[in-house]
Image (cartoon, rainbow, N blue to C red):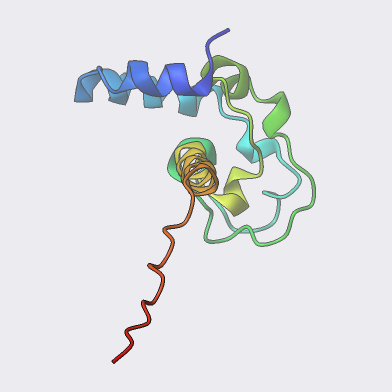
Amino acid sequence: MASFEEHMEEMSTLSPEEIGELMGEVKAACICGDCPSYADTGETGGAFCANGKSEYITENKGCNCGDCPVTGKMGLRWGGYCMQGSARGLWDAESKGSSEEETPAEEEPAEENVDE
């Protein structure tokens, strides 16, 4: 099974039409509407793993992301996209966080004492 990163790399080579087709597949497989957190919120959208946070879902009443076919198909490893944001956004934040940890902070140059 391909990782999310491999899917992102593959997607970077797709035409806008192919991206549109893939988004159609994601929307067709999406189970967001069956999620306990979705119910009775007024939300009408879905595919939050691709589209990002919901403006309506503000309380985690359970999460079905792990059971969604899109999770396996796209190598997703997060969840709660309706409240946390898209997989791409979470991946970017994760990547930024790890690169900050791996890159040591620049040290300030030591002050020189100049004797007059």
